[in-house]
Each structure stands twice: as structure tokens, then as C-alpha cells.
Image 1 (tube, rainbow, N blue to C red):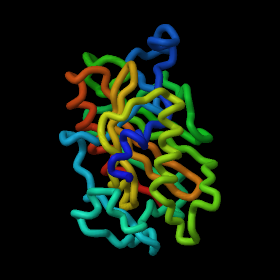
Image 2 (image 1 turned 180 degrees about the horizontal axis):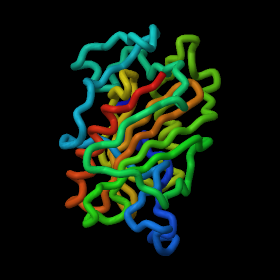
Image 3 (image 1 turned 180 degrees about the vertical axis):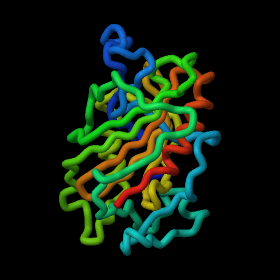
Image 4 (image 1 turned 120 degrees about the vertical axis):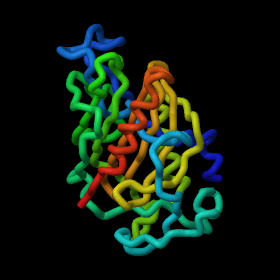
Length: 245
């Protein structure tokens, strides 16, 4: 059952974004408000006050550019998929682009300390408000080299339990705890997964957009509830700006 996946599926979290020379490595490398961006800095939306998302959907085999949407009532519950799955896009996700959210600036001095797949690129932005401490950032991480094996059908529809297994493995790598149930959503007009998770140093909301071989992980993280609003505001703009193809 996928809706209840959060307990079993714990869906999500790739890696752990840590500041270079940060709490675990010492002092920030040149900038104390930089953010690391890959893996697990998280971002996104997963909570009711997070960025607005497109109604959850379970896709059936078809043209990835014009996916058929299931009933909204049905789509909100992944368990009611009628043998549906996650439709993988054939788009080259390494060409993904996005825009800087208002009130943010590019951050440096962060690295992906625990990549869950082959790391292609990472991008991190922090609030321009200097009173917001390090690790409160929004991130985009792109991975390559994914192999779904025989799980992906000719139309690239992957069973949800296969997605669960992959994301659970990512979570185990970084010791993340699911804070909300995983849900279907859209990123760049394509089917994606979103969930809120927690780590020792911060919580985050993440979005996972999969192709047959690539993964775009957008996530936004906050170290304390007082910084969550500014991070989520930036995250909403970031997710909405993602384009692929």
C-alpha cells in the first residue's frame, strides 16, 4: 500500500547536504551562509503550508508529455492506483533549468556528502537575509546512472513498490525519518513524488523527478521552525520554475 508508505516506504530522502567546514566539518568554507546542495538538504513542500502542488496523479502508460490524469479523489491515495505506477519521463533531466527565487542568492561552500546516485550537479541558494543561519537553504541536485532494470515497462511505467524500495534505500543511507506520507505531484509538468523528512540537523521537503536514467531532486531545508516560512516561500518559487527538455 503506497499511501501508507511513509512508514514502510519512508519514501524519500537522498543524501545529506552539509556545509563545507560546517557543524560536522568545522567552520564554513569562506561563507557561513552557503548551502550545500545535494542529497538531503531538503526542500520543498510536503506540508500544508508548503508550495502549492498540482493535484496528485497516478499515470498510466501513455505519452509522458501529455499524461492522463486519474480522478483527483483517486490520485490522492496512491493505494488506489488500479495497477498504475510512476511514469518515467524520457527527457534528459541533466538539461533541467530553474530560476533563482526572490529573496535568495546562490550559495557556495556546500557539498553533497552522501550522494545516493552518480552526482551530476548541485545548486544551492540561501536567503539574502543575513540573520538566517547556514543550512537554511533551497537546493537542486541532479543524479545520473539510475538503472530500473526490468522493472520499467516499454512505456516506462515503474511499479510504485519499486519506487518505494529505491527511496527507502536513499533514506537508509542518510538516516532520515519520514515526517509526512509520500504523495504524487508534478515538477515541470511531469509526474514526481514529494515528501517531508527529518534529519538530526534540519528538516526538509523534497521533490523527486525520475527519468529512466536520471533523477532531479529539489529540496528545501530549515534548521528551526522560525526559518521554515522563508525557506518554503523560496521553495515554492523554485519548484514552480523548474523546466526540462
